Length: 160
Image (cartoon, rainbow, N blue to C red; front, side):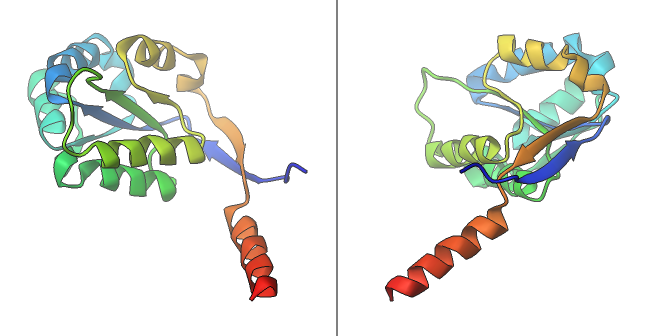
């Protein structure tokens, strides 16, 4: 039986995380330059070097976190949980092994759990950034996590 869930609203002004693996940094900078007029209407966040390079090459204001291998992906993930990141644009490199791959998978998983838009490549990012939802609020429903945890705990207590 599907639970009612909890309603979440992504505001008109979005909190967008911008992340890129080393071989994709020039691609995300070019993408940010191409979409600068849209991006400057929103709040931007990024991991380490990617955030610094975007700011330097585009002039867009962006708050930087740690580098991905030093916990930046996890910092972005924590902000998703806190409802402080609405969209993730992550130009990942599928052909190069990443030392922090478990962190990347955790970030992708938490974005799915919290039902936020996530792009792993330029085409998907283009679809998101040009969507009509970029200029409006967007309401979506999530599982009531607190209720689900309480239900699981009560089932486990019965078994003990």
